[in-house]
Amino acid sequence: MNPYRLVLKISQDEIQKRIHALATQIRNDYRGKDLLLVGVLKGAFIFLADLVRSLDLPVEVDFIRIASYGASTASSGGITLSKDLECTIDGRDVLVVEDIVDTGVTMQWLMAHLECRHPQSVKICALIDKYERRTVQVPVHYIGFRIPSGFVVGYGLDFAEKYRGLQGIYEVVFDTVEGSHAGQL
Ligand code: 5GP
Image (cartoon, rainbow, N blue to C red; front, side):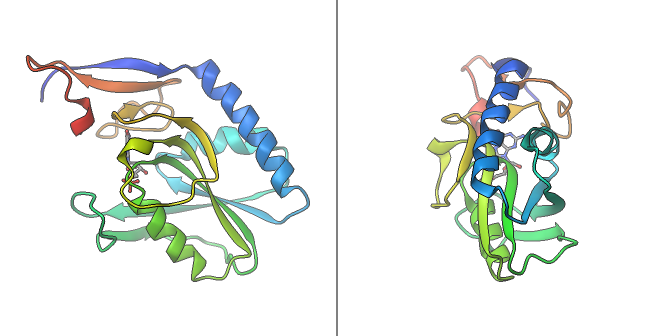
C-alpha cells in the first residue's frame, strides 16, 4: 500500500459544538415523543454516544449493522443486515444515527427496510454528508458536517479497522508521485 498521511479536517472542538447544536434541534423536534435512536454499527458508535448524552431526552437506543457486498453501486442487491434491531418500531418515531452518507445507497436501503415495519416516522441523522458522491436521493434530515468527497477516519470511522479512537476527523491522503489518491479508497 502507498504511504499516506492523515490530515485534520474537523477538530474535536468543532465536533462537540456541532453535536450540541444538533442535539438542540433534535430535542425541539422530538420533545414529548417516544423517540428511538438507531445507531448504525460500527462507524456511528461514538457519534451516537455523544449525541445521546447531549440530547437530554428519555430516548431508547438500539443498534443495527449492515453488511455490504461488492463495490457500492446503485444496486441495493448487495446489502443485508448482519445485526437487526432488538426492539419493535411499529408506531414509533425512529431516528437513524449514521456515520456517513456517501452514495446514499445504504441509507436508501435501510429506510425502505425500516418503513416496512410501520414506524410513525423515520428520519436520518448523519455525522457527515458527502454530498458530491451521492448517486441516489435520500433525505438526510440532520447533518453534522458536509464535505464534498475524500475518505475520512477518526471519531468512530475506520480505515481497515484502524483510527476509530481518534478525537478529530481526518482525511486519508495518499502520497504518490502522481498526487493524492484519497478519493479512490
Ligand atoms: P453509501 O452507501 O452511502 O455509499 O456508503 C455509506 C457507508 O460507507 C458509510 O456508512 C461508511 O461505512 C462507508 N463510508 C463512506 N465514506 C466513508 C469514509 O470517508 N470513511 C469511512 N471510514 N467510511 C466511509
